[in-house]
Amino acid sequence: MHVLDTSGSLCKHGEVPMKRRCVRWAGHVGFPVVVLLLAETFLPACSSSPSARDNEIDNLSRRANAGDAQAMYEMGMRCQRDLDLAQGRQWLVRAAGAGSAKAMDRLGDMYKAGSGGVARDYASALEWYRREADAGAAWGFIALGDCYSQGLGVPKDGTRVAEYYARAFTAAQHDAQRADPAAMDALGNLYRRGLGVGQDYDLALIWCRKAADAGDPSAMHTMALFYANGLGIEKDHAIAMIWNRKAAAAGSTGSMMNIGYCYEIGLGVDVDCNQAKAWFERAAASGASLAMSHLGDMYMSGKLADKNYAQATIWFHRAADAGNPAAMRNIGTLYLNGWGTTCDLREAQSWYRRAANAGDMDAKRWLVEHSAL
Image 1 (cartoon, helix red, strand yellow):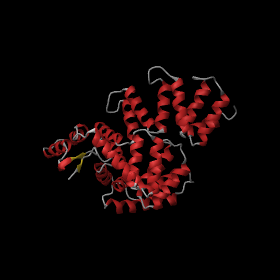
Image 2: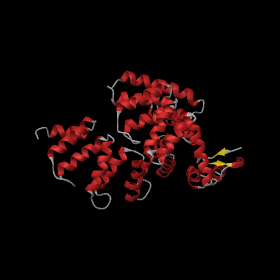
Image 3: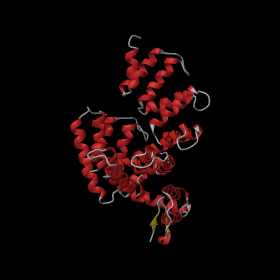
Image 4: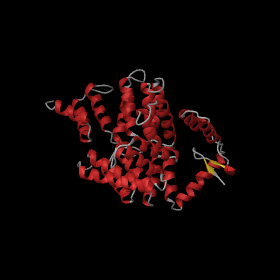
């Protein structure tokens, strides 16, 4: 018999991994939750040799090439974590074609945010979310509700918002009873946000913790939000950081960025802009356009020692190419002020228009205020 530990490595003979034994012992003697999480996060699991890891990858690849949708999805996510974004996207598209709702959701999120190696494209995001919803997945309904609520690629429509959130709650309730991690995470988030049901942080915590314990990266990220913001629980940035690290290790770019923000402003850790930069670069390498844009901000503002407009320009253009509106506006600002380039009002206006057309409100205000130029 094999037992799968929380890090994903297999231990022979059904032996409980060391960190799991430590967690059980700490819980038995009444240690606080932070000790339990630290044990989960930092104590080593049973070791696996390179040949064992190679065998695991080979087995996953064989299953994926044989048409296993879950294996295709796992290959896609593994490629994205290894920064092979093009190959990762190909596997995710194949997984979605084989019926993986998780792959559809990931692809929708990539196009919505302009991440994972694709440019922001709300029409493509909506297409993937609709396919996910058609498959009966709660997250597809939530995403569609969010798009109609915010007017992303579609006109705002309160009636459809209410319909999609209600359908999300029904689907999440049904699938969560079958211990589906994505459904448990969805149900927890519906309770957290009060969508399709009354807001209830206690139930939200219960369901998100179940999903996080089952290895769902999104749920781990949400657990960090609970502790960082004190939602139904005492605010604790140390525990939030632990959950963010667990989620980041599982591939959550949102948690990578959260860790970067914490180091940048000293939230639960000492201020360390070099550590912040490293985490934003990790998220950017995973295709997060928001991280690329933020790196540009850091170089432009001088948070990384002296101001470096050349590096700021590089990062803003990478983010803009991925569809990030704030980056487009900031390129306009560079041209407007002649920072790292010649002052060019016409070029600045062109970038502000691109940013405004992509939905950036600051760019829209600038164009109104300077319409006489």
